[in-house]
Length: 323
Image 1 (spheres, rainbow, N blue to C red):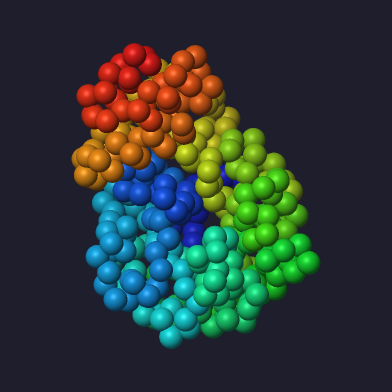
Image 2 (tube, helix red, strand yellow):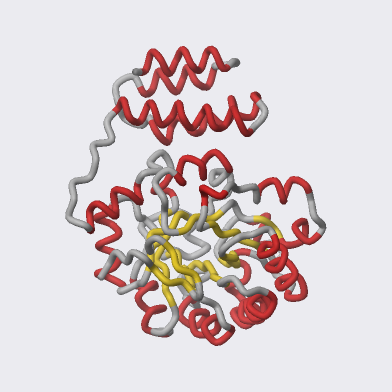
């Protein structure tokens, strides 16, 4: 069975096995407010670093804001210091999160330079130590997100699957690309299958190129994974979990027409205005608009106008014209 409703993750019962990923610079509070309308099985906040989390850094804690409507909700931590892992996980648990995830997949240089994120793929045993400390510190499920390896000469995800299973992790999510790949080229789902074979009793979450219900189905048939983490596929379509569930329940997916996308964009902007200072909401809108309005008539001129807008009124006028 591809779709599982409900779905068990460790001791936690989730609405489904369709999850929304932590996306740096995207999975902020308004983004998650939009996503919560469609109730993914689990969604994560943006990744936070262990060091500032332990220091109670105000900006880091702000990134972990959530409201009850967003549950089930997870937080993702990033770092390579074993002595901080348990402490960081405990803070996440104390904040009321349902799940804590260890990031071993972020490919950007400023993260990997200290051995964090994808840098941990060079030291699988350290991942095991980090996870063991986290598991010992908390009662909530501990999950791990990895890429397949640093590059194609070192595909270590199957080995990591065995290591984190022994360390007590509740699940491992595999992005079917290497760190060297970044986001170039298609995800290789064979690497997800290898992880499932290496650790058959561990919950394996597939990730990479899930932009439609059909892609979820193809990934399952290819890999036999237990759950699915939708990443970029959530951008501009917060309803994708609803489409996926309808697809597997034999129902017609709703038509997401131009008018609906415009309304969703307006809703997202209004939520951003409520949460962020006006200037930040205006700047964010320049990025967000391209998620919702892609190839429809007038999309290019709308985006050009959005990048020139300097006020809420100007943006509202553009949205009115777009409809």
